Length: 137
Image: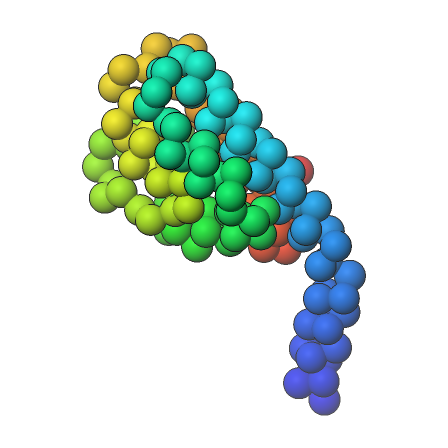
């Protein structure tokens, strides 16, 4: 009986969350694009490939890659705003290679730049939580 309950909850979740997850993926890619644009303005010529890769990737792919390669292994460090994250974690593979790019730029960023990046990472974490079915405040 319990197995049916789990299966019913799964299918209920899938059927109701797919459009919602697509909206989260769209919002995630939009915000990722905003961050890349802000960084391109601040560091001209440094994020050209990242911008192209982001533009060509599907919304769902960008979100899924972030969840698998950043959110799951490093979400706690991001939420804690662990600045050593960018200096000590081996670069991870994500569609725009953002983690490696941020690592390369972090030491050149002003406190204001870093604050902007943290705000975007906070948004990315909340969207990743929402896409993963976690309750988000």
